[in-house]
Image (cartoon, rainbow, N blue to C red):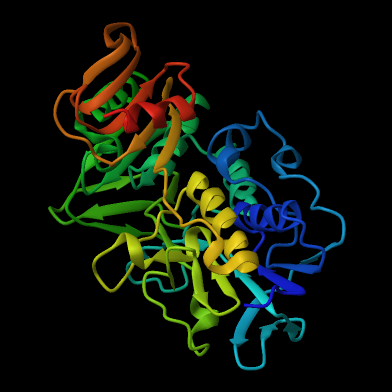
Length: 383
């Protein structure tokens, strides 16, 4: 494989920026063009549900930083198609040629839709503009209902409680159980309930209201209302622009163990589905900040070094801050049973935990504990 001379990066995410920095760090001196649909420079989404939403952190502070010299950043440019034979990315501002392509087009918030109202403006939190819109709306309401009890939904709920709002979270399972498991999940929910956050478990949720949802109905006939309803029900990879490209698509862009989708084309971040991590045909997506960074590094190296690049092996590290809990976790999600305490004392709320026990670990978690991520990863590998 001949090293590329002109690399195009589709997306303005942390995966896109990491790929660019890795290319330059490896000595790539060719031209790099970054195409971002958003009108603002690349930023990190992590603070959107926390400091930005609470008004403690100005949106300018979440910018990732300037790109390396010689990188052309085109804002407000949406990719609309890919011609692999001609090596051209179709965009709303014309065609862009490449001989190396990084697909980092990310994902968008999954929308549930509003019963009887196909044009309802469902509120989500995915982008900088979403965060600023939601922050402004919160200043005019007293009650909030969050549909979805994952990390994002519960972080939004936590921030809303901090702002003095009456908060209800609705999900099909107890909030957080599908991520951090029922043991620690119960601890966080207890803290949430102590500050007035109500949590509802329902088999099915239907959004109601116009122009914005203002209530939800559950399959068992219950109805919950609030001044503001926010959907935090996962994401959908942005692959529609690749529909006629010839790339393999499923849960995302199918990539191999080096994040390659086709000769001269790699994908990373929320849009990439790794076939080598899943025995089935759909591949595995890991939509986390850490994964986007790790995957983008491998993808960029593969673009330059082909089979000499390292294989991608996810660390499966994630974290969240909510309701007074700082949780850092490495390994399998939703650990079950009572964990072993490797350090600290959980009765004081500060501990390092391991599942299923201290000898054979598949998950390690720091709960309000200063253990850095690198040490958590070592603890997981130490069995």
